[in-house]
Length: 105
Image 1 (cartoon, rainbow, N blue to C red):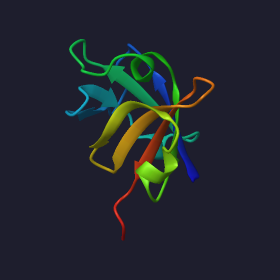
Image 2 (cartoon, rainbow, N blue to C red):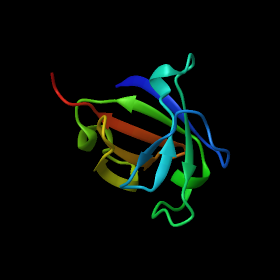
Image 3 (cartoon, rainbow, N blue to C red):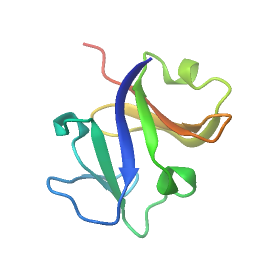
Image 4 (spheres, rainbow, N blue to C red):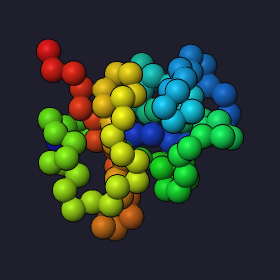
């Protein structure tokens, strides 16, 4: 597991946002941020609810989402986010984590 980025919820439009249709959320390119921050701005009709929409998350690059997520509560089943397949989970102490499987080169 390798740190990838931190995601922070906002209601303010940010420069260079990209739209993720699967979750109806606008995101910034964390790859371009000096501290790997991803800003997330949800559309009012986004299907995402609960902790993923309300709390920040820490994202990790993993080889296998099912393996990394063992024993964690599923918040958002894995889906194709464009740059990677991602899934969101809640840790035992309530933190939100995102696991990312990038395409194999």
